[in-house]
Length: 455
Image 1 (cartoon, rainbow, N blue to C red):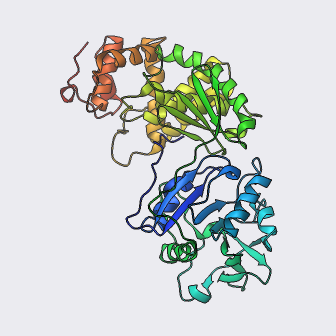
Image 2 (cartoon, rainbow, N blue to C red; image 1 turned 30 degrees about the vertical axis):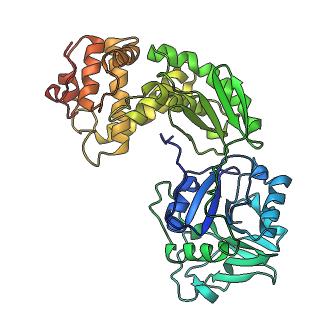
């Protein structure tokens, strides 16, 4: 559950490629701009497709980037027709997928082009052939391909099995390769094979002419409905999840209001985007995005309660994000909502994190969670401990007092909100100087570093 602002269109100085990274079949933070940053930033304008692939306008695009997809949202007939039409118009399609484990939905699409995603793992080392001969080839892990004679191998494994290949489809080009040949980390810190991936894609995509004076446009989920004041956004594939997720949000919201004692910050949480993933969500404050099958939803309900509470919670925290525990406080809100809804998983989640932190700091008095390099388990566990102790000693309703005081004492356009400010707000909220207590828990806080008044 990462607090992300939606990425804007990435612009290159002199682009020869207009690319679309498709995140409609399966969303990942990596495909939401990171692939472009690693391999195409100097040569491409890249946008993301959040809507149905079947309705994507590819007329002024020459590179389409696809992953394997998710079985819950198969590549439908409309998506297949659009891919075929794009190839017939001279476009290049890169498909990154593996047949190892469970075969992905894109495997059926590739079968129509004489390619099978094999369930055999590639054996290292790998070697480039043809134009990639002599290139260093890195593969995290992945599978091999069985191809008909129309394909040209580009990368082989130790046993001579194909791992990357391309073929012409009319005037267009189809490139198919193991997902393990490309970066995957959400922070784009793993640009493996960047010396040849970008040039390969540009050489193929440039075969189709584009109007470089008319940049491509990011495509949003095209369908929506209103749930009270909240606009729910989805596409053809995620529509099946929308109503159940909205029902959870409607159950969660009254509890968030009770816990925080305030409405969301003005202008926040106006939209909810249903993401085709089980990998979490994000928030921009105005929009929260929710992974449609997070935690096994709808069969399992608590993880979705926690996720929606977490992402919505950012809209209560803004416009001044918490300085240390912006993520932990959002999850604690989800835990507290779960407890109020009599979900035993909530208490177990809290206890697990506290136990992890106690392994590092048994009585929570030794380690400063604000220190550089502080362990995640320490930060999260000690944050939970603080919230629980404040509720026990100054509640019930201490968190509501905090949110109410924060709204009241922080003036508009304040430039910063530090941990010293945070403790000052807590002190005002409970009418007691809490700096000594936080210091006893090894927090590096000092009243002299805040301009907020004492209680």
